[in-house]
Length: 332
Ligand code: SD4
Image 1 (cartoon, protein in one colour):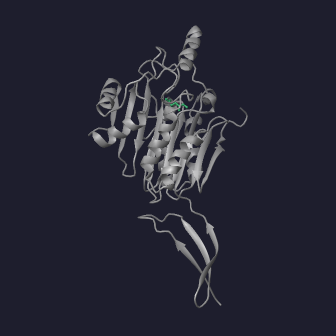
Image 2: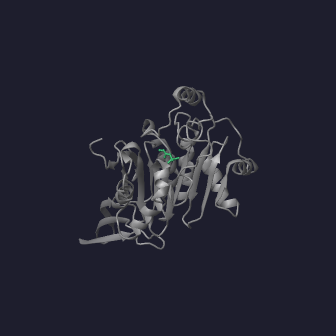
Image 3: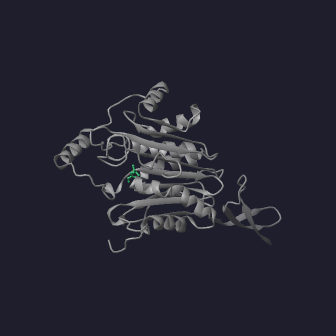
């Protein structure tokens, strides 16, 4: 019997992606029998902020069926936008001080094209409107009434996004009307999602109703390309959650991707970006949360936050898992 081992590298367009299906085979005159298959395939994969297994399952379904990462992140985010129980995304989101639910969202594809909507009202699937901005307009960002008008022109339905539960919460809040961003709202928050498809192409998306009881007109980091989300198909992608003002001040997601470009792993890049916030003189970080998740071109992932209880959901190699994030404030 002649024994031969060979390594078959899956060919991935334009990148040295670490996809290795290692097959040891036994060969005799007429037959070749694969005796062992060690599958270390890292792609496709999808990761998302917080505990959102239904959203990652939807994205995975698309990726596993050979679909592209852009469709995967859009449709994954749509699951949470439609989930009325999630009070910080889409329908059922907590309103601003005046009782209006206003949405921010963005999306970015493998080419670095992007679209975003800010201060959008009465449209559940803000991420899909952002995609239409990217694909159907000469612009990157539409706001408020203009964004809504555009959405309606694209066939989106206008609906009331303030559910009874969110209205009740707002009415209770109004009694004292004290404004303080809440850390880790119900462990389920703004959705940020990053995916790599079978071709090795990366896309990302983000959708939120922003901070509960914010000032009317306030826009956070989530629809700001480079702050709430950044994708560079050569390097990787990152997405943020938490107090948007602090993410914007450090252009957080772009920073994470640039750190990966300099050679840091996704984990180390997220850690460094959080440190930039925490290490500022007189930083008030004990009173707010920021978390990042990131993926690099090789399909390695990372996540890090200021406070405990931030998590990432990852669907890779057929496994949909919630992974607790490491964090800075060990004593909190
Ligand atoms: C914002 N970053 O509007 C969003 C909110 C968020 O966890 O992510 N909350 O600032």
